[in-house]
View 1 (cartoon, rainbow, N blue to C red):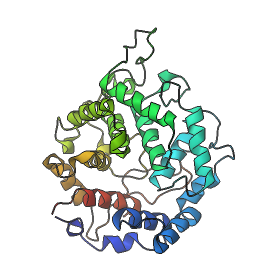
View 2 (view 1 turned 135 degrees about the vertical axis):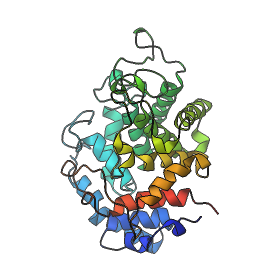
View 3 (view 1 turned 90 degrees about the horizontal axis):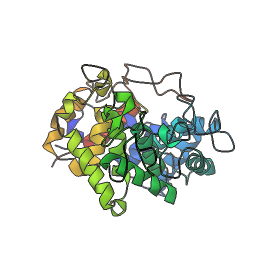
View 4 (view 1 turned 90 degrees about the vertical axis):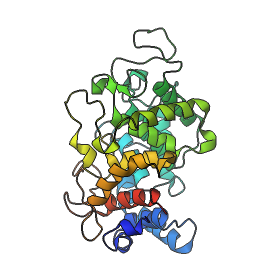
Length: 340
């Protein structure tokens, strides 16, 4: 089934309306497969930078490359450096667009990354977590960063999933180890999930790996990917019945689609990660895809069900109303997973 046949209305025309330059740019890039420097696409890209939410985020950046407070940038949520970088990546920004973007990426690598490759809340290795690691690794790749320090971050992320060469939290003399809080054990174990594997963090990790070019996926990274894929396919994706450390059942946010996507995740992002890793036509995605298709209205538009209104540099729509950013995410997934 083609992605067009799965839509209830003329969704693409709605996404391509010129009044929303950020969405128009990404719809042209990801749905129409336009590429820079084609004349029409170049104009849409320039408009997204000058008039879309990318401009609003960049206008709030300090000249040195950070947002709000210098340092690792995790706080304040969701306007600090970490969140602004993640937002820019999801908006389709790229270091080739504006020197400020490259400056901000360099700032994150200099201030939020340890020598051993952990992205950290505190500046110390103990301040790392899968959601932060995966989000920043994915974002920096999307933004166009090519830096050996990022390679180190991917290596740590792979080791932290597979457990290879990483000692237990109690082995405080080890070169690399887990910690009691945050990233506390192999696979996706996290102190914030009662030391159980955190599927939210795992989605971010797999998404980051999926964005890494195939030729850069070492044997270590491939083993980590396989462990993650096996974890997610161990149940029906649509149930999201992964370990919930502090609750008897999964968070309802798995079924609430939003934009942007920070450490909370949803079925859209889970399917995105698995499809990008080569499982786009795997029948085990079908129940999750059915949920995704059924969330559209009669016009082929998806609502905003999860948001950060008033907490970011720019808002992305009204909750429970048809939303172009969420619709774009859904169409991207349906296109990626279409069958002949």
